[in-house]
View 1 (cartoon, helix red, strand yellow):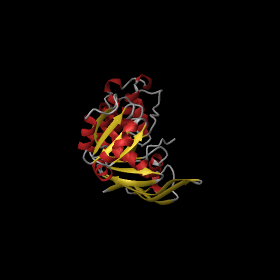
View 2: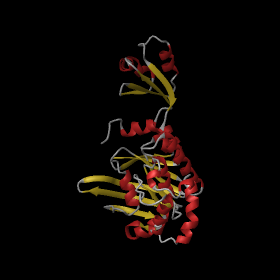
View 3: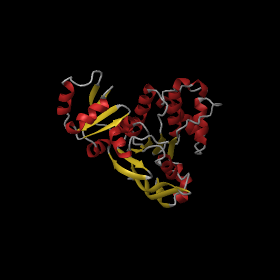
View 4: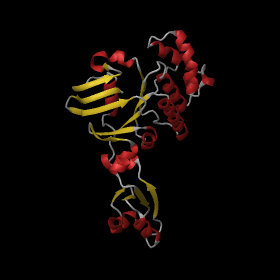
Length: 306
């Protein structure tokens, strides 16, 4: 069953084209990732899906409702984790959840019964009566996630939910998101962390310049778009070595920031050459499997987007 459907959606701001006919289907119980460089249209897509902005063309349905005409009704069944925490610093953790729940016309009795479980889910039960200023960044993100669940939504929209968090906090958020999908929730996730998308998402769409350029599971995208083995070569003389030898030892290579990325179907010949030890002293290398980040950079380029 499709809980969210965008078909042929176009969006422009004046002469600036943001989206050019995108199609997205979110199914029950899956995590769908939307990846793209800065300015590719990810956040705009979320805003359109929630009815917070309107397209020039196309149809959008959320939880069975036409978003163009019944956005408020559709949003009653959705949770949202925005890029910023926007928690109320004047309230305790418990009060933040209570006040937010009232926006959904949920009775105080139901909220009082629901809040302890949400605080436990966020690992914040012991801090229920503390104010927001006492929380770390990771705790605030966990509380924001718990708050997004106050109305027991079927879908949770997450716009870069782990930006700015340390690795420990990020892994804890990932664990909570896995729990949600295991419990039947559907997630629509935007992120700049390729590892996050590769670990969490059942399906991924990569969007660039307002168009979806590919879609599939992380494993499928890696299999379809990139060679399976990658050798990274770095150190003084890496560029000279690559231009002299890489073309005959791998399917293709890229040079960026002083590092050579050699992509190969079989890296044996390349590794044999590197292990001979007759190349420039100080040159180092490592072999790793191809990743979603390799796919992303191949399809969208390595140039910085502002």
